[in-house]
Length: 197
Ligand code: AMP
Image 1 (cartoon, rainbow, N blue to C red):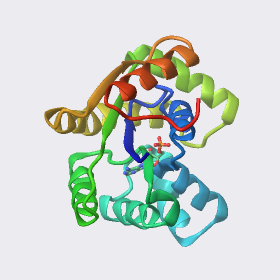
Image 2 (image 1 turned 60 degrees about the horizontal axis):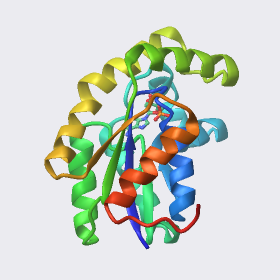
Image 3 (image 1 turned 90 degrees about the horizontal axis):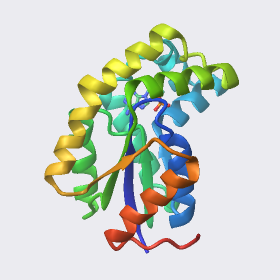
């Protein structure tokens, strides 16, 4: 069955990891704007050159640029039967862009998974990731900026989706398996059926 999902949470909430597991279980692709930007930066594409300084500083890439990339990605064949968005939309302007785009296709998001993790815990997890992966935007300054933007711009999108009754707030503290199980249970309660375990 199709599932059109969005996973939201502060940096360090584990949304990237959980997003991959959920997408696998539903047989849908993950569409992560952060991953798309990082791949372009690594390959030195025109887009990569344009966004490197912005992402390194922890700022948001302009909405028009980001929304166009998502629109293109969602137009590909593998996203016709559903998708899991990770990292987009990130503010209410982007919500408007996504709404318009999905409306053209006669589609809606089925569920928004909100991973709830206290700020202290997020910072501790990002610091650990910085050590392990050496991401160029995992500097102390950029991390603080990203968390601030999350609180001021991204958290409000949850209210928009909550009004539509599609938000599942998931306690993001626990083991990886526990959190995955909580997400699966919430989606199942919406009648969203997994294709794999
Ligand atoms: P992420 O991996 O989701 O933390 O994204 C890494 C960086 O990519 C962010 O700090 C932003 O600079 C940029 N980015 C990712 N998604 C978006 C988005 N939806 N809108 C604007 N910038 C984004």
